[in-house]
Image 1 (cartoon, helix red, strand yellow):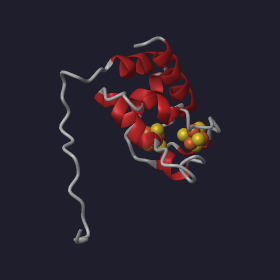
Image 2 (image 1 turned 60 degrees about the vertical axis):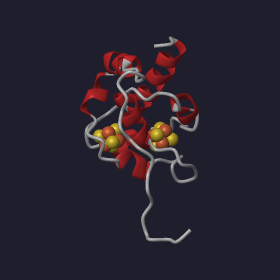
Image 3 (image 1 turned 90 degrees about the horizontal axis):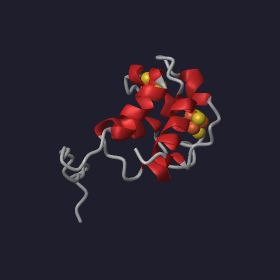
Length: 110
Ligand code: SF4
Ligand code: SF4
């Protein structure tokens, strides 16, 4: 295949009939700072795990907000809960607790 310097991505339209906002609502309810995230990506730039894997907290929070939760369980398993991202976050998001609440929400089958 010829490399034109860009890729044709899969369609990213969100199908509201198959998305589930329950996990996002659970996390927002139990860790209020999740509401203040602006998706800036500072957490991912400093993340200990992202240095060695494709883990990306910014992408994760976006998928959860969109209600696309199919891969969330496998993704959060990569987080080491080191808390570095929390120190760097300009919005004061308690990222470690967000991860814990995501785990709790998944266990509660929300
Ligand atoms: S650094 Fe904070 S505000 Fe920025 S994407 Fe991460 S959690 Fe959200
Ligand atoms: S707590 Fe998780 S998301 Fe945050 S820097 Fe550590 S490994 Fe990355």
